[in-house]
Length: 157
Image 1 (cartoon, one colour):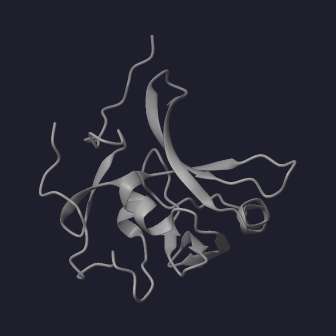
Image 2 (cartoon, helix red, strand yellow; image 1 turned 120 degrees about the vertical axis):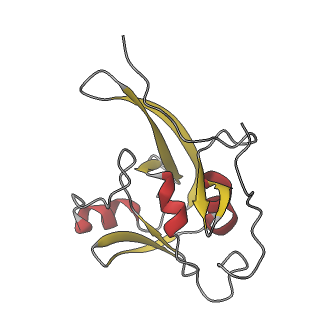
């Protein structure tokens, strides 16, 4: 029988994990959706040893392992670029994945568009903590310190 790993608080609207972003609780999916929905990935870069997706409006999202929150260091940049460049972020989802020890772990996924008529959409599993590391371009209304966030002081149970 599979054991389920302890989960973080979840958003009552989306069901997605909540994370502390700039001192406030935010739904990871809603936070990313506000800034990145429909945005196209234009590049994959390394900043301080962490791979980031660079979106067409200048946002940069760190790619963190969904199970431990550490940087994804096993990425082959050339392969990742070929797979992801030009795709638009269409949404986020959650899935349960089984680990080798039989336990289950919740996987937060970024869902990306097809590249062409006969291709399929793809997903990238990332830690919800990636939302806390999102780099905002100048002028983004959700950048830290502009007071536009909708986070809460604490998650509701």
